[in-house]
Length: 290
Image 1 (cartoon, rainbow, N blue to C red):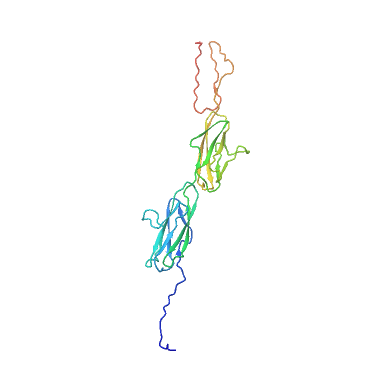
Image 2: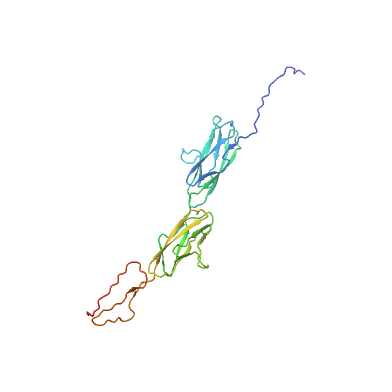
């Protein structure tokens, strides 16, 4: 047909259907409140051109991402070229201190553009370990109770717990002093419960002191511990002072002492009960000089 010598070349370009992917941490990245940590970002394969990876700041404002700590502020992009694409890039995550004792979390959305990575996306999950340990707010000074009476003191939590908190008070070794966290129930109760909804409400504790047979002021101490809700290490001591209501008296002859003129006689002086220290008894000479 007249085409016996016709020839030519057709050039074929093959478009790869594999999109590059981002290699991100396979598990949650943990950072302690008030500190920083790092994680790496890599490309899965050589790009066709420069790739820019962008990390979105988390919605949790306490957690920040920075791709270049040597520059002021938080940078949020990484650049990979065809020459250094296989070098991992380090990303710094920081967690600010907050006012509660809760662990926290955040997520970082990661996207890429250019070099065959236009569809590459991912998410890095962040866990923030809280460094705040809840403490118990107890009386700052000694609690005083009168012998035979009762008084109260308050127990509070320092901050919102992560779950229910049980506070336990140990009965004093001084058996005359008793603690009761619920006077409407029979016997002495020794626990208090705080929840995440009522944690800011103080709990009242009643202290009672029994009568004893001496005139001494007394003392006792109450050990207090907590468990649960971020308060597992919280503990303290409440010091109790017992004011004795007994005043010692002198036991003297109940009737008139008789002595014959020119002679002598005796009478006894006694203390009614054990004193708190040495007692000096003074006898005044009679107005009758004989």
